[in-house]
Image (cartoon, rainbow, N blue to C red; front, side, top):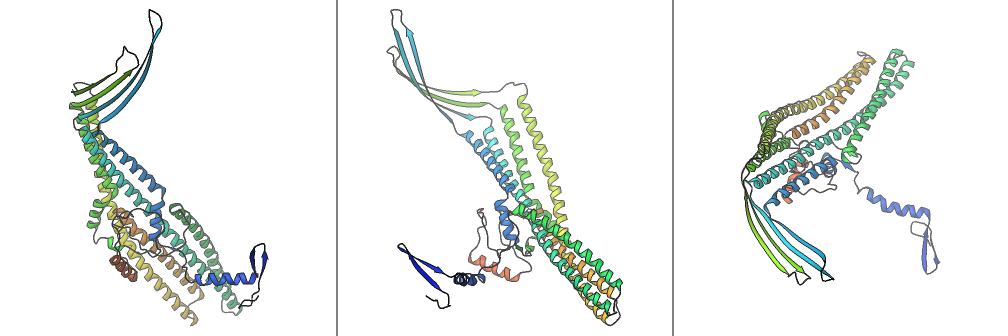
Length: 491
C-alpha cells in the first residue's frame, strides 16, 4: 500500500497480531513531522542570575549544614523548656524467694511490684526560666548564622556567574580579533606583492597574531576555571548566561544610610547581638544557683505476693523538700565569674563587629559607585576607540596614516573592549557585594526589586504583582524557576 507521500507501507500477520513495517525513509519523515514543529516552540535553555541563586540556595551543602546546626539549636530550646514539666517514672519488679523450713520442706514466695513516681522542681532560683530564654536567644543567633552563610554563598555564586559570563565574552572577542588578524595577514601579503607594504608591516601583524593566540589560550583557561567554580557552587554546568539586571532600588543615596542599613540588617551582627543577650541570661542562670530550691515528689507502689505470710499491699508517699546551698568550695562563684567573662567577651566582639561592618558597608558603597562610573566610562572609551579606528582607516587610504597606525588603533580598540567586559562584570559584583555587606543579599527574604536596563521587565513585574502578590515569607522549595523570573531575593 502507498501513502500520500509515496512511502511504501506493508504489513503481515504474525500469530494473532498484525505487524506494520514502514520503510526507513517513511519513519524518518514521520519523526521529522513530529519534531520540527516543536523546534520553534521549545526555547533554548538560558540561565539567569535569579535562577542560579535560587538553585544555590536550595541545594548548597554549606547552607544545609548551617540549617542542621539550627535544628540542633532548636532541640536545645525544647530541652530547656522541658524543665518546666514534671518527671514521671513507672517502675516494676519481680522477686523469687525460696526458704528452707526447720520442720522440713521449702517455701517459695513470688512477689511482683508496681510503682509510679512523680517529681517536679517548683523553684530553683529562676534558673529554668533564664536557661530557657538563653536557649531562645541562642536559637535566634543560629537563625542569623544561616542567613549569614546564605549571604556568603550567594555572593560567591554571583562572582562565579560573572566570571563565566566575562570569560565567554572575552573568548568571543579574542577569537574575532584573531580572525581579523589572520585576514589582515593575508591582505598584507597581497599588498606586499603589489608593492604597497613592506615586510616590516607583515612582521608587526605576525607578532600581533602570536600574541592573540596566547591571549586566547589564557582566556580558555580562565573560562575552564570559572566553569569549575560555577559547577561546584550550583551543581550543574552553566548554559547560555544573560547579563543580570541591577537591583538599584536597594542602594541608598548616601554613605550614612548604607551604614545604618548594614547595622540594622547584617545577619552576622544580629547573631552577635543575640549571643550577647544569651550570655546575659547565662549570668542570671549562674547567679540563681545561690538561691534555694523547692522540690515536690509523689510515689505510689503496689505489691502482689504469692505467699500467705506476705499480704498484698499498696502504699503511697508525698514529700516537699526545700534545699538551701551554704558552701561548695566556690564552684558556684566560679560559674558566675565565667559567665560574666563570656558576656564581656560577646559584648566586645559585638562592638568590634559593628565597627567593622560599618567600615565594610562604606567601602562597598563607594566601590559600587566607582564601578558604575567605570562601566559608563569604559563604554564611552569603546565608542571613542571605534571612531578612532574608523578615522585612521580613512586617513590611511588618503596616505596620511601608515598601516602600523591601523594596527595600533585595533589594539587600542581591543583593550577598550576587554576593559568594558571586565567593567560590566565588576559592576554586577560591586552592587551585589554592597548588598551582601548590608545584609540584603538573601533568598529567604524574597521581595520584588526595581530593575535597571529593562523597562519592559519592570512593567511585567508590576503587572504580575498586582495579579498575584508573592508571599513575603515563602517556603523554601527546591526546583527550577521560570527563566524570566528576575532576581527578587532582596529584602
